[in-house]
Image (cartoon, rainbow, N blue to C red; front, side, top):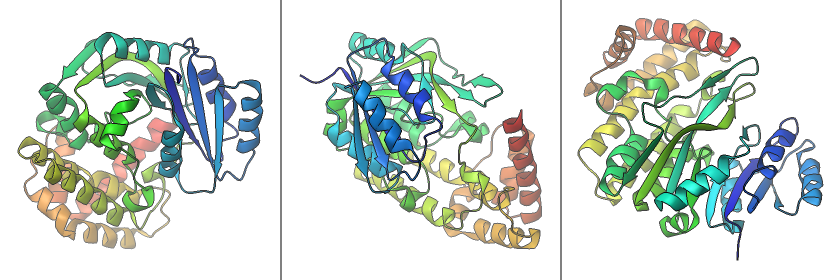
Length: 356
């Protein structure tokens, strides 16, 4: 008989943070936990740290593989996981001692396929809890699960469009606990980030959410998401990002087609695509990009001319503050100078928040 919970940790060059993460997992009040750490070709001392910790605690299993990316590492962990429920933790993050006891207890009480908790963003000098507009415990079953969880994974509708920075707040895997059999039934796996740029978590969650029949949200911030060393999409220029995002949208569109999801689900995807000009634009404008301003303006013009983005923006009705409305109207009507100016302002605000 396997453990109650398996926790999968993908590791790549994280020796500075690993002890904190492992201590939080091996110190869980729920003792019947296995931790599967997948060393993804680390070039630092991560593997040695993992092996030393495994020698001290038999609940830690170490898998060593050549570097293939976080998705491959998580998939390798899934093949080894023997728990009735499965969770994911990133190696620079940590969790409260009672996290997995609480999520497992909730899953059993509610007969839930997926349990999700809120989290705290850790900036080193300060912390900020992520608040969701929901009560302490929210349960979605059957059709309501599709409408309230699956649809949110695809994209926003209505007034949700007014908070583009929260687009993927529901899509992370590291603040959730999944019934292991559900993952197997869905044949869910993580997509290579080299193909899609980001949102491998969201694609995984779409696969499992479609097969799930019960979902519980617990409004307690058990998970601590470390932002100090986070390599953001918008911290430097990735010339492949637009191509990768377009492939991501193709996969999401095919998901809808294969499962016969139309109406509000299609609207949500079109809204996601329109909103993504923020991240794609910041990729070009961000301080990490050393491109001269004229070249940035040229790249932004090309971005706004991209056919799939133009199609989504043409039907997009902005929501939220006047600034967000102005930003997306500039994108919609391809007013590049205004688009650039608002992106530059958004990037400065983002940097100030991180420093504070």
